Every structure is written in structure tokens, then in C-alpha cells.
Length: 282
Image (cartoon, rainbow, N blue to C red; front, side, top):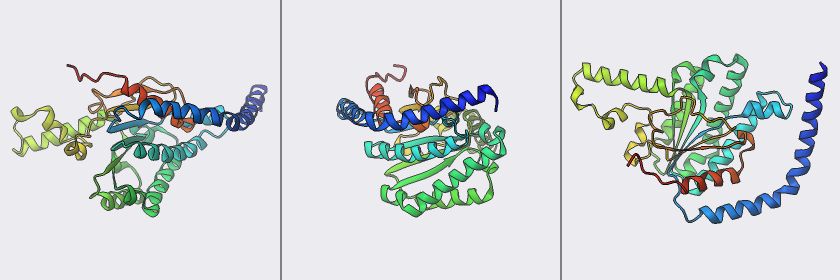
């Protein structure tokens, strides 16, 4: 190991020790702050559909001296917590940007396999622990599912089939997904219907086009367009996520890396959402 590498490892060890010491000391302060934030948002409007770009797993792991891939493990555990917070808050639909199309095609084989194994674990846990039945969650996967392994596609089919009759809550998982690719696919499907005489060009409107998007199953409940989009890690971009659907969404960018995203970070996002005036171009 080089001198620079040794220094980084020493810094990482010190940071981990400081975190272990600081967390118990700060926990009461965080709890009081959390309660104060809750008092500010509890009486306000709650977004019906929240979309999340859970970014920063690898950078968080590198910062603490872990293997970057380990960050996805911590990110997965944090996702389960955040979903519970959102359901308890009364949010009706959540869309998670699990893996972009680029993640599925350009990341290393080792990382892709690890991410897919976490996905497989998540599906199994939802099925076996009964959370989808308890909370009446309809689970839907969107994206290029044709490029993932057949065994995982089968698990996706099983969970979608089992949950298809639920409409109390919706969990959408964007997998191997890209917003541009989704729009191109929708145009192709629409073009096929035009050629078959099912749709006339003059009949095409935004409402008609929305039926060809991957979120069309939410249209009946008026949930196909997120009210709030949260992105962690401090990056200020949407990264090809739900490009059509988020045209009028409120965007909230959080500095925390995803594995360290706390309830107070979520409450801050909700507070920011409540303080905005949604005019939808009017």
C-alpha cells in the first residue's frame, strides 16, 4: 500500500470510530429535532406520490474505507426503512430508481450481479414476510426487464401477479430504466396502434400518450406523475429518471449519501414540499 493509501485507511478508521462514538451522543438531539420537524409538517399536505433517486452508496462506502460494493448493502437496508416511513406518513405511491439502464449495461459484472442479488433478496423478503399483503401494496417493475436474468424476471412476475389486485399503496421499481428509452418505447407502441388503425394521428393528445408509458397503471388514481422527487448525495440532476412524468414535480436535493439518509432528511424534504406553491404552469 502506498503512503497515500495508508493515510486514507487511517483517516477512514478514525472516521468510523468517531461515528460510533458520536451517534449515541447525538441520538437524543436528533430525536428532539425529528419531533420538532414533525410538529412543522404533521398538519400540512403530504405528497401522494414520492419518487426517489437513492444515490451515493459507493461514495459513502469509499468515504468510510469499505469496498464500494458494500455501500449497496447498507443502501438496501436503508431503503426498507424509508419505505416504512413513507407508508406510515400516508404516501400512496413510491417509485424507486433501483438501477438505470446504464447501471445494467455499463457497470462491472461483479457489481451488476451484486445489485441483482439484492433485488432478488428484496422480492423474496416482500413475498415471505407478507409486507405487500399487510400494507396492500401493488408492486410494479418498469424498465428494460428483457435484459435481466430469467430467474429474476420470474420472481418479478410472481410478485406482480400476487399484488396486482391491491390499490391501497403502490411501489414502482425502476429497473434497467431510462426515461428517454421509455419515451421511445411509448412512441413505438403508439406508432403500431396507428398502423393498425386503433388510433388516428389527430386523436393523439398528452392524455392518449400517457397510456403508453410504464406508469399508466397509476393513471386511474391520478398518481402517474410524482408530486415530489428526492435525490440524495448532493447531485443536482435527474439522471434520465421519469422524464415525462416529473415535468411538474417538486425536486428536492439532499446532501446526505443514501445509506445515511435519516428520518430528519425525509421530514426536511416534506417541509420543503409543503412550503412550495404548486402552480403547474398557471
